[in-house]
Image (cartoon, rainbow, N blue to C red):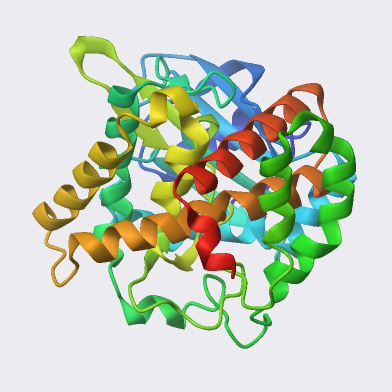
Length: 360
C-alpha cells in the first residue's frame, strides 16, 4: 500500500487508518485531536491523540507525533539547501535499526525529492519531557545523555561503508571549506545581532575561528577516527524521562546527521548543555564516563589521550551551528535567547579548554 505524503491540513482519520494497516496495527481511528509541540525551527511537530471507533489492538498508539516542514519560507529553503529534511527521513529509513541509541519508533517516513515536502510519524514518548537549552542540565542528566550517545557512535565506529551513502556524506559535491565560507558569510550579521551580549574574549574567539584557512571548520575528508554524528545533540533535541529513579534519554531531530569526529558531539553537548559553573568541576569525569562506555561497547585502539585531544578540538563544533543557524532560520524571541546562551557557553568552553591553540 502506497501512502501519500500528507500536509497538516489534509491529514485525516482515513490516512491514519491506512498507515496503521500498513504497519500491521489493528485499529480504526474515529477522530483525533491535534496540538503543536516542541520548539523546532526547521520542522514543525504536531501531537495527534486518537479516539478509536472500536476496541483496538494492544499495539495501537494512544498518540503519535507528526513532523512537517516549517511554515516559514526561509526555514523551508534552508531545510532543502542543507538537506535537513532528506537526512532526517533517510535516518529513519536506513540507519535507525542498526543503532542502539534510543529514538522514537517510526511509523511513516517519506519525502518528495529533497523536500521541502516530507512527513514523519513518530512514537510519542510522553511523559518524557524535552530538555531546556536555556536552563541547562546537571551532571547526572548530562551523563545519561552521553551514555546514549555511545549508542550512536560505537555501532558506526570507523565504518567505511557509511561513506558510500551519498545523502549522508558526499565529499565530492561539497568543498572542504564550505562550512568555513558559510560561517564567514554569516559572521558579521551574527556579531552585529548578538555581539553586544557577549564578553569581549567570547566575541573574539568566535571571530578568530573565521580568520585561518586551516580552521577546524575545514573538513578535508573524514578524520582518522570517525562515526555517525548527530551534529545538533543538545538538550532541546533530547527527551528525558526520570520516572523510577533513573533518567531515560531519547534523541530526536536527526536533520544534520553526517560522518565526523564523535568527540564533536560530546564537546557540543557538554559545551552547550551545562553552565560554566556546573561544567568545570565535572567535565573530565563526564568525558571519561563516555570514553569508558565506548570501551565497554567494543571500541578498541582508541586511548584516553586521543579522546581528550579530540574533545578539546571538538569545542569549536558548536560555533558553526550557533552562528550559521541563528542567521538562516526563522527568528524568534526564544531563538535569540537560545543562540545568545549557546554562543556564550561554547565560547567560554573553548577558552577554558585553551582550544584557541588550534587556531594558530
